[in-house]
Length: 141
Image (cartoon, rainbow, N blue to C red; front, side, top):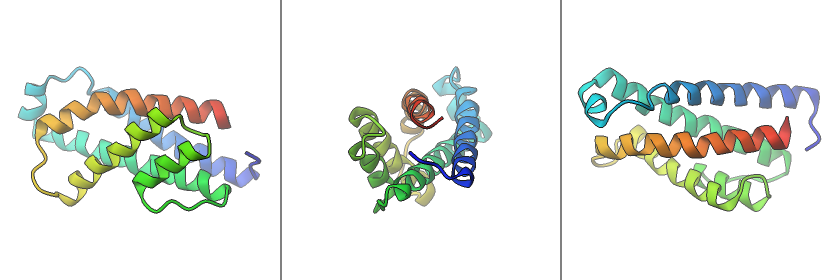
């Protein structure tokens, strides 16, 4: 991608936000389900980090896609389009696209989302957003 100097600076800034949220989430990696369910503050912190990770990643997707003249219809679509343009591998894009549903459930409190579901997704976020970060760093930095 041919970056204008300001664009590269914006991209790096967004990527740094994502890295920071990702590292904060990783600090909860060893938390047991019992610890997670019993500690309201940690539970809310993790939920917020999951939300922020999805939002910043989708912001990055939109930024990259707009540089290619592409608009995504939704957060989910932004990951699928990142696959279509050859930036993120399909299996990773599919897994990341699914994380947007959890973000929506957390933010909009759609129905009951169970602590177990959020807890189980922490390891998914750590695995696949880690791959996403590496992919972006390898392609653009």
